[in-house]
Amino acid sequence: MRGLTAGQYRPLTDENIKAVHETSANLLQNPGIRCDNEKALELFAQNGAEVNKETKMVKIPRGMLEDAIASAPSRVTLCGREEKNDLILEGKRTHLGTGGTVLNALDLETGERRPTVRKDMKDFAKLVDALDNIHFFMLPLYPNDIEVQNIDVNRFFWALANTSKHIMGGVYTVDGIRSVIDIAEKISGGPEKLRQRPIVSMVTCVMSPLVIDDTYGGLLMEVAGQGIPVVCPAEPLAGATAPSTIAGTVAISNAETLSGIVLAQLTNKGTPTIYGTVSSSMDMKTGSYLSGNIEMGLINAASAQMAQYYEIPIYATAGMSDSKLPDAQAGYEKMATAMITALAGANFIHDAAGFLEFCTTISYEQMVLDDEMIGICMRAVKGIEVTEETLAEEVIRSVGAGGNFLANPHTMKHCRSEFFYPTIGDRQSRKLWEKNGAQDARQRSIEKAKLILSEHKPLQIADEVINDIKAKYPQLDI
Image 1 (cartoon, helix red, strand yellow):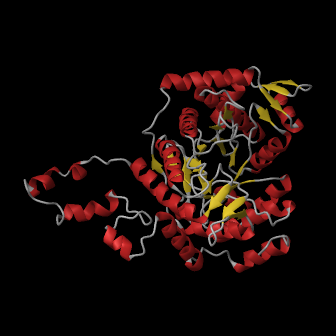
Image 2: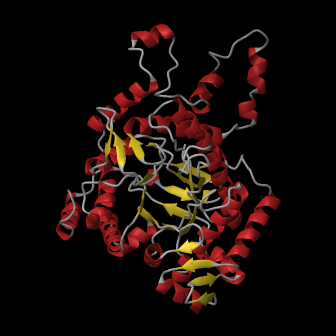
């Protein structure tokens, strides 16, 4: 159930949305943003922004902002190597998947936390490929056993080789961007085919509060210039790098990602640019970053409304937990934020599968559990279909008082499509549950993950393409 239309949940009124927009537009004009990238500064100045080269402050006029919003596409298609995995980002169509980038994993055999390695990237891509409710594979980890200069090509290649779902990821160098795009072009069949069907997309960022830094500003311009879909999210923390109020955090996050959209559109007008937010809050008791708090869900749901106001697709964040294990806390924290952000109609909800411990650790069994959680969220997004057929007036009349509907053809027709059937959740009687080993959900998820990794066969890349890539990029671990 990918790409269903949501929008049932609206934490902001229409008046609230306009107020947030006005605040953000005012902030972009005064004080403006600080831009540390010289090339970006020149581009802003050439197009009419007020630029102070000493302080590097850029005041973005309303006209420039409005032009960028108008030129950013309202529909962005992120493709998989198989068309069945294509994602259409527009309006309130909702998709959920993985996120990035963590440095630790819970070992599938021992349950202990350890540094992530190259094999994890391959195995998690393979796992996601087999899990139907996870809609895309955003590169979720940083392999600690790979040299920094080889990270970009290896992460993207391993993902492309082990899942046919869309691949999105952060990038670290301009050379890395160019190499990744070159590899994707080879797999797609050439530069034009990649732009027609982008099987990869990339993430940069805007620093909070109100800074486009030198490195990420340059990366954003490179990706936008190449015509590859790009996200420019902000990550303000309420109480730290943003006001402690949710409304203030939404406003500054909105201003920051809009500044990235402006820069992308100035670089390459019409390039597919996605509104983005990774906003959350600081724990005011400990000073730490939080990922499982309900306020994160509220901020991201409200941000989805802002993106819908601008008619630009949104990359939002939900479905994480601060728990250290796949436990009850992980369950309720993940479901709370994923559900409301999905119901708000966010288009591309990342970090929704596999993450624990303040978004620092990834878990195989949690990925399986989250696949089921996402399935439940999407059933809620689907909502209730009310038609003459589903109201079943004649069926009710034919069964009559005191009858039952079990053997009625109407029941057989709709029972598979109307209900969500879990594969991990237990609905057996206690007697059967005990007979089958009395396992809890985590144990069942571990078994399913192991089965997928041992048996699932992802769509392969042609040998001649692999050989071509390997010859050009010997640093790849193929």
